[in-house]
Length: 50
Image (cartoon, rainbow, N blue to C red; front, top):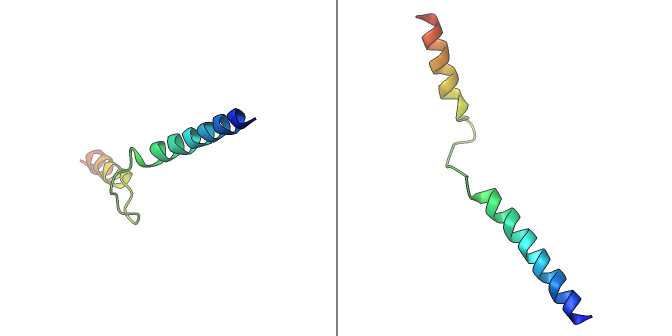
C-alpha cells in the first residue's frame, strides 16, 4: 500500500513540476499595458501607407 502512495506522490510532484516549468520557461519581461504585437502592427501600418 505504501508503494502506491509513494508512486502517487511522485506522479503528483512531476505533474506540478512540469506545469510550473512550462508556465515560466518562455516568459519575457513585457509590460502588460503594451503588448508585444503592437510594434509589428504599427510597422505594418506604416509600410502600407507609403
